[in-house]
Image (cartoon, rainbow, N blue to C red; front, side, top):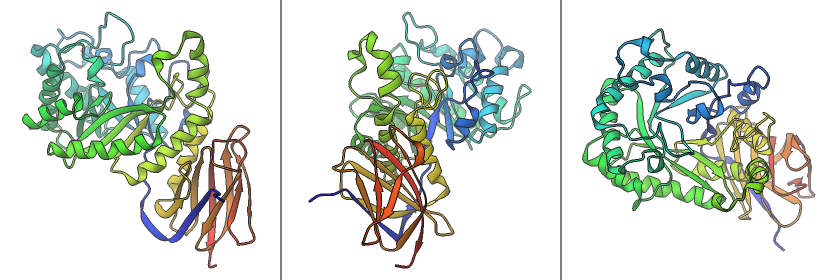
Length: 438
């Protein structure tokens, strides 16, 4: 009879743990005097925050976006008085203080209305000036320009989802990227310049056209970025290999892969009626199904060439890890469980005998072992963990209907295997063990 089992080989190191738990957005500052999530955000140990859609969450704030910092293109780009940095300074500074680095998206936030204003194409005659303004934004945060800082922000992304946020011929955007990337890379050769955060990665779609244009123009592409919203864990894994093959085929073999927006989305957005939206966005998109999907994706990506992942979002948006009132969701606690794995940098061989059961096993230098287990709809309520060594547990916590990283039932069976008794499904389990000779 089939029973869900995991097998751990404590003596076989298979690589290093990749910190793919990056996100979109820093802790919001709008309303933070009443609802500050900075400490909860810090506990996630998010390595990078991509700054996209920041003005949408920080209502009334002029932050991050190109048009918010330099709103009038007729002004002198070399005069610091024509830039408004103050609120972005605070936003970025707060994020860095809690230990999360920045990916700065140069361009506009999404617009969910017509006519669109900020996502109109940049006129060709303004491309050089756009590059000058972008350069001065970089200098402000990295070189102290305009009473600025020396933050050392490494990643600078050009635009977001040009398929919808460049309301002109996509061929013009591709040329705009090439023009801008060449200028920025020549001025800042040590920085990572990339983009363009496509809606999807497809050779026959916009991705192929963009990469072809970059190759023909010999444009720098230090990282290629795209997005994915789905409920299929296997697709999340497979598309990374597809993206690697596609980017390589145009000669960009050293280009990093950034899946810099991703989220669990069951069904079709267009089919969600207005009265269903509160349940869909505040429950289905944030609770246990979403949380288990999250840890499963972070698990399967360990064996792919993905370099960066940024969850959309880490904050209090309708797609966030928190409710719109700042209350942590089940997805928050699942993301926090992955963050706990970062203390264990060496990956160990661990396999599952069930397609609905995922495992990530790691150890730290003293030999302590941690496992992250994602359980979907397996048969029964006992997960057996077999190992080549005797394991004694030091901590075992779960995220399920009744627990938010709180203790779960764990014991040894007659064969000295670990037995973990789960409650509701799906569930996510984090456990720490000390191994001794069997």
